[in-house]
Image (cartoon, rainbow, N blue to C red; front, side, top):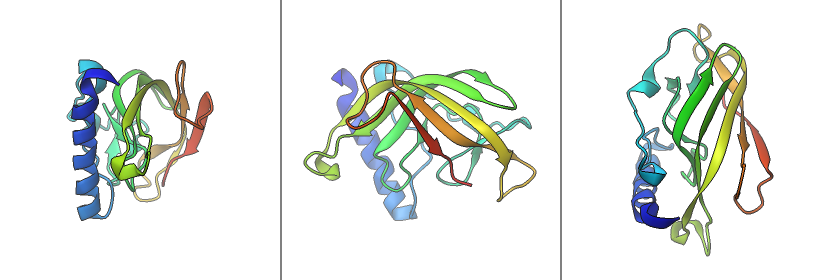
Length: 159
């Protein structure tokens, strides 16, 4: 993981502590790998197109980071750079930061994996029906991937 190991681990631990006190994971962006920065301001835009709903039930467009494991923060998308965001789908490149949980999660190490993120299947959001949200997220690992993960992993997103 290299030079950003400690910074990433500290940021994710802080996010996990915040999540524990709030009862859910934080939407705060963890430190980005490889010296890249995240822009939390750009993440708050909503221009009428589909949104990505974060762990705090906030609608986001083109977020720089996104927590996949809301309960414990052990899987986070970071340094996201969106090349496409339209009414049907969105595509970004970034990193999936994953805790190996060895020997257990609190003592585990975070590893970063290059990833291509795809969002699709927009539908009205139950909480705010005037907004459409992406309901499916796919991760494609073009190189290394987390232990037990397939080259492409697809997940339903919360409503």
